[in-house]
Length: 194
Image (tube, rainbow, N blue to C red; front, side, top):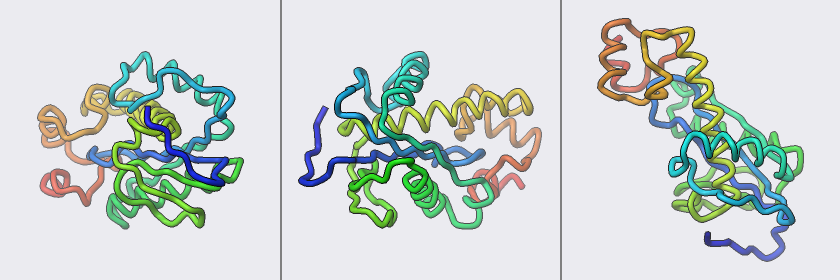
């Protein structure tokens, strides 16, 4: 794992999001400040881990990190602002919700919102930066669990399987059962079916 070293940055928050691509549900973000004295083994991009491994690390991160916060932007906010701006808003909420204020923020991807703190976007950050990996795991496990819960309420859409992503089965289910309040009406595949 590539370590970023910043002069004077003692409290680095890693930020990542999950759920930009799905047709329904909130976009979920997390911010994590790890404890340098308690390194967590096995951190990597959440998509590269098995569900069991992610669930295991989820609890460890919450116990061992100096600070963490999970935040979101709602379906309404996504439709109002667009997915990019809603994601940036959710990232700002995650960082401002941290119980300890970081002095540097690293964000997965190629852009970051204004946190009022020095920040840098890191392409493939969830693979390269432990703090971002930890954030990606918290965000992914949180969103996946929500999709499983929503699946119990709306089993006709198969959310537990595809987590809201536009799979063939999901699109067929929307066509058959229609669009409810969970869906992002501004997304083209949903818009076409409303």
